[in-house]
Length: 354
View 1: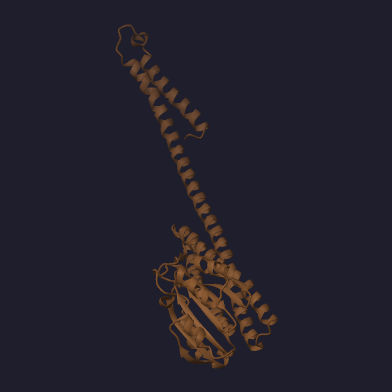
View 2: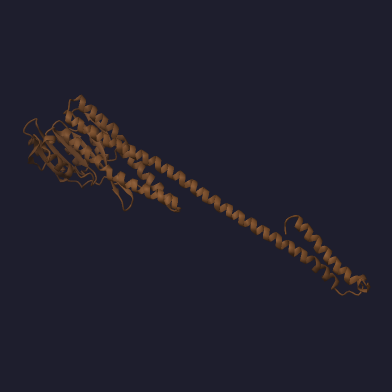
């Protein structure tokens, strides 16, 4: 089952307490590090500069304070507070609001851990609101600072880099799910009785992964359309198309996993049914053999019972028994026993009891 990190905001405190990194850039180079939102905005020397602020698990008051500083739309702030959104892109005036869901595969528990990220991209600022450990935006910041020619393109370039990092983070998840599916296929054909539960659990993980990745395609397509509409840098649009291609591969792989798991479950059900049929057939054969043995025992018991009954009658030793004084009484009794046994044997033999 997928693990969701609940929004665990910090206790009531200033917005600065939720800032994990804040800096001002100009022409792709860092010119200052700031400790507050107001300092970041006041430190912008001109329109070619940009503020990049990262918040980690801010509470409601902190988000509202940030919204007031940057003039964020209330609906976008409300979504950021809820922190249980699907990937999406919305434009509020000159500000883009982007929701991304990063994923991390936990091999020990065979689970996918999801983290939600909200990005506010304005004309001269980029504000990230992170609600989980992943994605690691410090790596994104380091990458952009090492490529000032890309960072020079402004907040949209940072937004691209964040999307790229989230999509690249799906690759280990795909590899982990593929490995689990390979193991499940082996267990299915080896007759592991506990594989059904593993198939079910992994199917839930794949479904949750699909929910996190499938809306990403529409979001990236809309973002690419916006880049074209607002005449963003052509190189940046090429980078974004590359991210879209990678996301498409991820979505297709996830869809394939879903179908493959459905097929594996069907095959497993078929194999279980076949095993049950074989067991039922063996049980029926055993019951038939036991029935045949019972018929033989019953037939011989009946054959042996007949002379015993006759002998018992003649052994009662009453005084007035006509055969006692008859010369042929003894041979007659023996002949009657033999005739009865032969008759019963013939009847049972004709009915295939013997």
